[in-house]
Image (cartoon, rainbow, N blue to C red; front, side, top):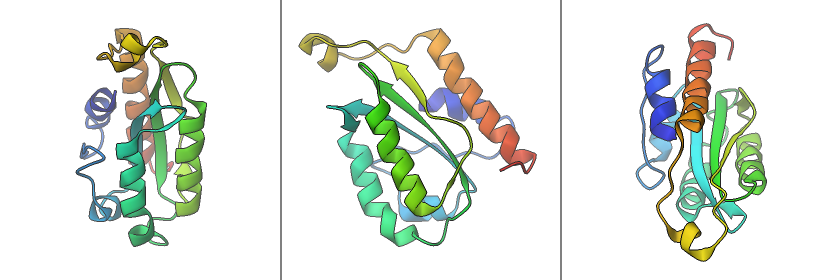
Length: 144
């Protein structure tokens, strides 16, 4: 999902794709906007994404205000809580929501489905590409 959005965005703007584990406060400070992408686990943002927010929240607080963001969530059922958590963190950073959260539902409900590798279908990847392209277009036109 993140790769699809990044590939579409890079047609209009410079991009940097990093995993939550590899991203640092300096990456946030050096970017003009953000697309946060994470799975929802047990009705919450995934642990790696929570760790990213824990490590990066205070070091950039007050320094990235007004920058645009969007988010994508991969969820087994609804993804709403993970989206709310990221939106709340973005609100604390005083980021500007560029578009509503994109939630891709995998419908994984059984234990073996939940632990299995997920397939994101082409229609959903196209939605991710559209989000990335829209974010980039808005940034390049100065809308955000």
